[in-house]
Amino acid sequence: MEISQIDYILVPCGLFVLAVYHVWLVVMIIRAPERTVIGLNAESRRQWVYCLVKDPLKNGTLAVQTIRNNMMASTQLATISITLSSLISAFVSSYNSSSNSSSTKLSSTSSVHTYKYFAILVCFLLAFFCYLQCTRYYAHVSFFVSLPSSASRRENIEYVAKQLNRGSIFWSLGLRAFYLSFPLMLWIFGGIPMFLCCCGLTAVLYFLDTTSSLTREIYQGENNSACSVDSFAADAGESGDSNSNLSRLLLKHQIVTYQHANTVTEDGSR
Image (cartoon, rainbow, N blue to C red):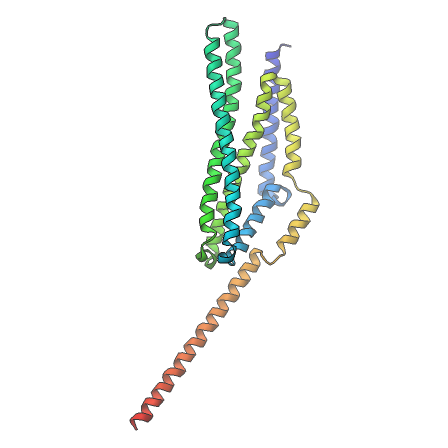
């Protein structure tokens, strides 16, 4: 069997393995998020937002610093992505210009290599786009999470948590684009290294994306802490009751003061 025929069989098989794994991962995130690292991290970030908005003036600095560190990391990865894309584009353009004067067989080989480099270029451009969106969402959250008015309504807190999780989703997509570039780089050396890399990458991602029983127990312990969503709702209810009681006391005090003033006025007129 020729090398080109091996590429036609192994390359689609390797991409199919990665596609099937990520479809399974998406289904697990939707149906059983506690069995995936992405699902547990999303819920942990949601509870983190609820903890911060309890006292935004005290926790605002911590929130902004944490989000700023994530923004710096996403900015650096975006810079690396666009730099690699520029280098690949320059290399492909120079490679094609040097192969235009060659024979037909060499030109056909160069066109195959051009498709491979173009696939790698698409991965890095996709990673660059994802990290840009990640930085965008983190920049929005850095403003919303430190607002004192955000703690007054639960809908505002849910909005901030959704924006934070969306930025993390784009972060994960950018990493997946980097992971996909590994087998595409090995595709330059043939279909067999590319297929083996797809299988090995799928096995590694499975251990990185799934959670163990110990991780789920730790998460359940954190879920029972004072910074849960239910505790926030209870605190909001207690604060609402205390505010209503305070309003009643103030109104009663005003009525007593008004009655006392009328009594003094009547005595003075007599």
